[in-house]
Length: 190
Length: 296
Image 1 (cartoon, each protein chain N blue to C red):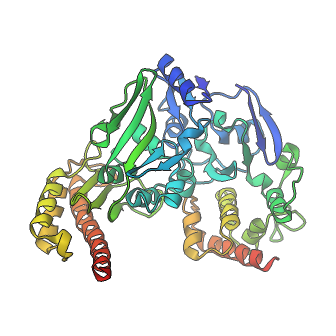
Image 2: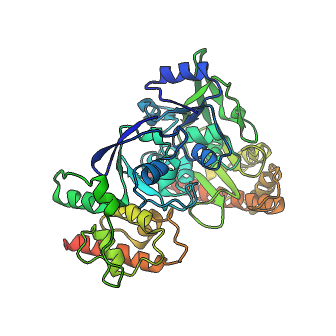
Image 3: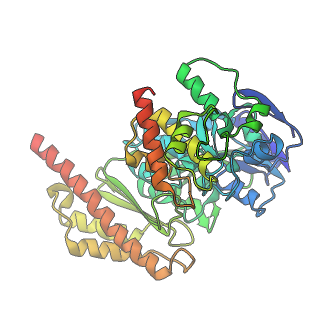
């Protein structure tokens, strides 16, 4: 079947989608957006977390056809999404080409410099919250949504909001630091 | 596989009548796991996300009519006062991502003995509103679960809503698992005090082939509370009464040994949860009782 939906602010079309396919598979294999990670395929790990009409969901548990006509934000569009939210203006979204080419520039310790990042992404880099990086995209999408809803979260709020995202490097303390940092910067308007 | 996309409830009923084997999918948190792992390859997948009615709830005088697809996160947020037991149970479901998608209709459709909503529904008292092109009916929650992952639905029927009695007293929910999030219950227990009828109702999850009530325990406690005048005098529950209640709840289980726990552990844990939830709810009732007495 054919699927029409909005991804990172731009209308997209996917063809030959199998009816039992997940939204995650469509994003990764048909649209070439591998930012959302495929790990457990049963909603346990949260590494495939995306926003579906603004709501954080595991994209592995959304049937592709259920995304028809809906709006999806993936980690590739997070920087633009956050900028749009901060400015309160509509932007042009992130094109597939841009999204596919997105990288946190450079592979050294200065990773991130020169590339536009969402505040929560920058905070993850600054706090050293990225180890192997596999859980990071899901954590970023979940953390960004929590900060949008709850600008001054307690530690308990953060733990609860991220309780559906597993990090097997066990880097949770740094991840907590990163979200606290993003919240602090957000409240200072940095 | 065909993907059916009914735009209205009537269309969904017609599609289900035409294709009784069609698998309804709403939150997808059960169905998609089975498809992803190739455990299930339904001929028809029927998306219920387009039917707005299923995402709504109405608070009536006696009960709440909860649309089958109202996500757990909404129940936690909006129905804590009316349905405290179910709101507590909803909060223990998996993770925020799952609670944003899954709802009580799916829990009932799957009818797993480990479904988190079941003990709360059994304790509160509920009826499941189901419909087919042949007509609508309401199935009392006590008659709904018919076996392991089996329910009273006919092949052409769909779950539209659940009518849950509004709380008239304190309710509690307790669940045993290895961590707070992302846990399938090893076992779970729901308890509701109903001061208006001077009754107590229970619900046990994951400790029998289906979710069950501990009816003998309820009858014992109802009689003990009545006999001792507890509803009026607001005294603390006698330890021997609490213990007998806990033992009878444990005895209502018919658990199995599996990877999550042994039958013996489940029976024991249900007894502990029964005693604790009774204490919590009764203390809450006594507190409210004292305030009322003081004001009178």
